[in-house]
Image 1: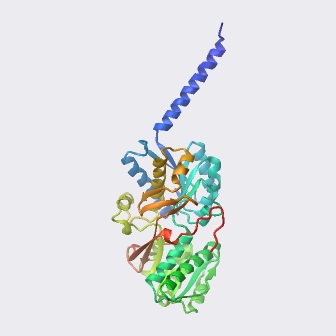
Image 2 (image 1 turned 30 degrees about the vertical axis):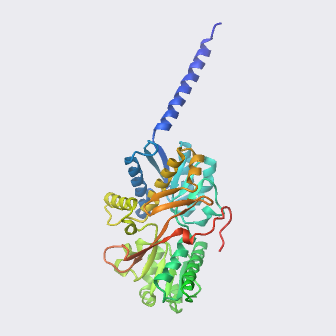
Image 3 (image 1 turned 120 degrees about the vertical axis):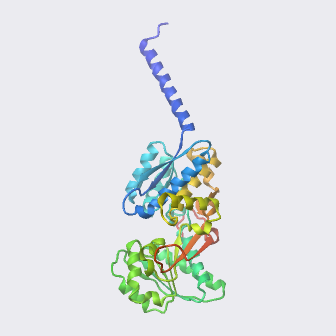
Length: 412
């Protein structure tokens, strides 16, 4: 039987395509494991968000120096979301289209909430590396998304307990918060922990109504005067970005910091000491993602601190470095456990995963994908040249964790 030339060519093309596919598959099995990382890569906010990128790079290098994962090197593919939800979504789609199915990143809640719902459609496993929003493990829960760090409820509840423990004689508390849902919820969670701490010791605590301000209000003096008119001794506060520094500066001439025995906040952290230096109020307690001095005897934490300062030439290791470092370490641990980089296998491995972090052992709660580890706080005060904590504290996140109710909005 005569075989036509066209048939021969078609068969050859098919065989060549199959061979190319086999070569691509072989390369995928032996080439680097690509992890997508969505974060700010440019602009003014890189001054703090850049710590996540450096932390991720350090984790990558540490893993690769030890032989990689399943004998393959780890590659971190960075994409800039410009702190924009639309750009974050575009970055996830672009990376998924290029074959990256394991991703992590963005500390900005708006961007993280934008990418989380599309992860299942794109076949992506996504680790939320910075946002503490409760929605990821509650009303917006989906099987492909995991929240690595402590959420707002855990952090604020623990913060209230810390204040009751450290300042047992401060029993009149108020708050200055932005008039948004996160501000009001944070105050509720803090007040809950504060009451728990005092009541456990047989004390009563008086909690005054919060003073709420419109975000971006340049003149906070009326709100400060409102606080001054109350008999509060302790203040819980949240102001974002430049508003935080403005509040601290405006409070000084009005005598707010002389009135208060302690104040505590949860959004600005080391930037307070770095910016205000000698004008930092006494007894200013901040929640931080990681305080390196608490983990100097932890091999992972000590290595991260050492590498961060060596690479950046900064005096102290940034708390934000932990977020990127922890995400890469957690994903690598899940791949090892799964013995695969396939999305379903990695999801299964992440559920109930225990891994080593720069804060010690962490676990991923299987029921709602909430990461549980340690909650860190530092106390700042007037200083000439450093933001470093005068005192620090850590708490076990699981001791203050909310019940797992995936798919259901969180309610107190």
